[in-house]
Image (tube, rainbow, N blue to C red; front, side, top):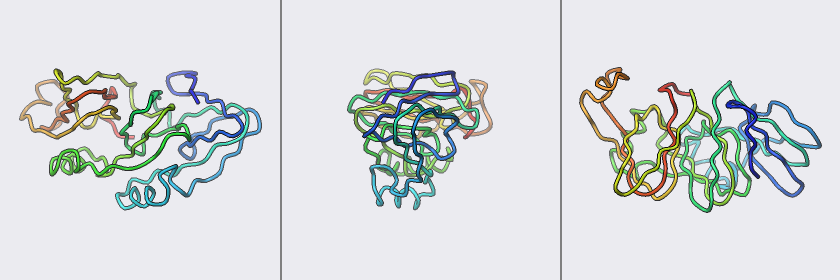
Amino acid sequence: MPFREISSRMVEATVAPGQTMFSQRGAMLAYKGEVSFTPNLQGGQGGVMSMLGRRAAGEAAPLMTVEGSGTVMFGHGGHHIQVINLAGDTLYVEADRLLAFDGTLQQGTMFMGSQGGVMGMVRGQVSGQGLFTTTLKGHGAVAVMAHGGVIEIPITPQRPVHVDPQAYVAHHGDVRNKLSTALGWRDMVGRGSGEAFQLELSGSGAVYVQASEEKL
């Protein structure tokens, strides 16, 4: 179920009979046709365990199920929106950045410590992002929110990417992440506020970075 970008802050999705999509509650701006919106208590396709894992981490994002026949326009808080199309791979994204996504995608969670040991857990504390990150896997589209627009940066085995943890939005592919220290790094590039950490992503895939250090 592809999204059509109406503007940098609004997308439109077509809903057809027999298809389901999920969106963040309060994200519907307008709709045409016979479309229903119901609170989702199962945490998407991840089921109850997925929902409990997110709540245990304080990262539950209330969702609503969207069904019927028509078109729906989504946006939230005036945030910029980036549409990411998945072709069988997995997207790792913070729950509060999800605007809407295909119901065909399998939803789950990943403990950040498993991708970087202690440093993975430190990343959650330093960046303000949850220790559990939401995963969406399969074929379909995802609309995520960010401040100031988003850029996609390829990650290759020969060229790992270093990102300011506050600017990180999401990533996909066979990617490993770890938090490293670089004293003075933020101050040298003119974005400094005292922290000297950068998120290193290596492997094969892509990372999405917002043009701001502001949280949603």
